[in-house]
Length: 79
Image (spheres, rainbow, N blue to C red):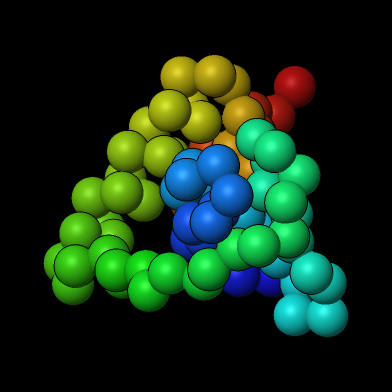
């Protein structure tokens, strides 16, 4: 499911929503369906590696490795 940026015409709020193509979103602030889908700016090329490294570092500090590939996870010690 993609994340879209929306602007509510009723309460003038701008927000992001994770939306399925078949669903009609509502404003989380006022509940209105009078939304305008905005153009989102994609991440600049070359920043993805830095973002991924930062997320992996955060995961390692928290003790989970769910966003790592199996080959990148720490090897389990033999007991």
